[in-house]
Image (tube, rainbow, N blue to C red; front, side, top):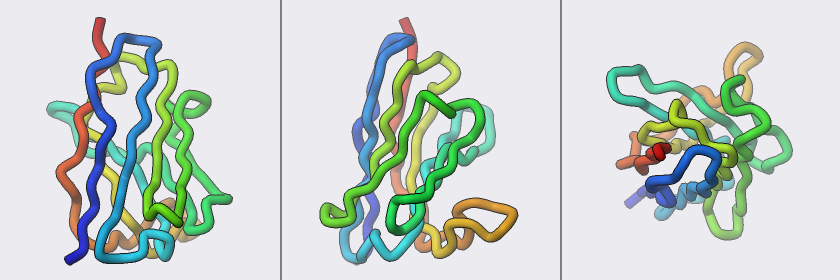
Length: 126
């Protein structure tokens, strides 16, 4: 049975940091690009970051550039999202998902493999 579990969320003050983990079981995450997405209340899900299979290529939405870092440890079947200098507008449920294609020429993280996980809540508030 394939499964993807997000963890590491929580309540943090503005300016704080969190590291999210995305761990796969039942399949080899290293075969796929992986994207982190987030969905705030009342808003559509948006792409935050995408990483290639080997980890050498990464992409970020403009609002998190310079603050978030995506990385992966294929030996641990895990992808991480280090989030620094968090802002209240980063509050959302964060999801990860594997993708067949890292970059199509017009879009990062395309052709999702499998369904969404439960996500992990990140709340940035004083």
